[in-house]
Length: 468
Figure 1 (tube, helix red, strand yellow):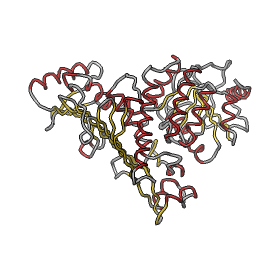
Figure 2 (cartoon, rainbow, N blue to C red):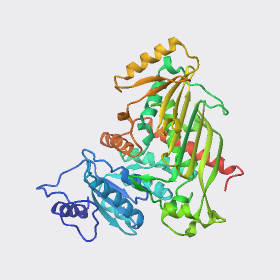
Figure 3 (tube, rainbow, N blue to C red):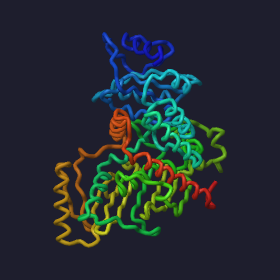
Figure 4 (cartoon, one colour):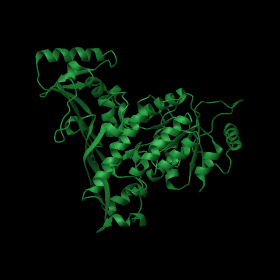
């Protein structure tokens, strides 16, 4: 631990801020001794709002002093502003103290000073694999936003990083928030009840057994204010194409639901059948609205034609996973219509029923789970009611509502988490893994299988005539 770390802690406790540091939070009262926490967070080069969402909540045994290392600029200011917003909110305010190192040598300073033991990564994806490698080689735990990699050539580096993490007894993990949505949890749970779902169908390429689709928007609100995206976000060489970005969540859910807690081997379990990608076109006015910039930077000029910015944010893949046909697709529009937002569609086809999550106009743009039997009967209805009654022990208030195609699962609002709230759930589970010193045995092979799937999809899509 560096001298600088202890000096900064003493200054914090005394209410004094060194000139070389910035503090984006109120000072805490002085104490006679410096408390010792098993978890100390470091935020490295925060360029995406997900870095701040990790700190929307406080956590037991986590030091409220968080050291931030960054090159400076607007992205750092926006990150600190979000933390300050969490610290000053009226209801359940956070109490983070941000100590900032700002300079061109920020990564070297972080590795040298070792002011924490868990590094949070969320930002420019072009740098992420290098950050991950450097951190795990130096013995830091890493909690990384998705995607960990955006280029097929980095898959080998990711595999080595997991091996280095094991060797150095640290935990490398990515932030899979969608596992904590109640509709997905119940879809997975019911798919494991043979009397309700039967066995998962194998499907075909034209009629897959599992389908997951999501629609996202460049312009949106985060923590109540319009989100400003960095200009590099629209460069697929820095952010990554849509087929390797948001699809990470969807591929993860397919593995997590269809093969729960099973270690996959990407070398033999995954076969990519087809993949395609297509662009979203942004006008100069739209680009200016979401970035706050008036003109396209030089690194985006190669994507501009007739003043429109081409962003390959959309993609679709068809593949098999242990013989099960799956389809994943993601679309990015500029802005959602008033009263709507990002949407998710998920379908699992079983021998006895399909489990479907819809989030459209009929559902008031909130995810809703449906059970649609292949053959409706009084006997099936009785079995389903019995199984839902069992689940009420875990989720009091859970109920069924008859629909034309089957049933809607009525889920009390208290079990639903918005996107921002899921970050605390992921972080709490990750911190438990750090304290235990290991991940479940299936997590690492399944993360590798997930990124192999998205990388193979990108390779196939680029090989198509539509590739750039």
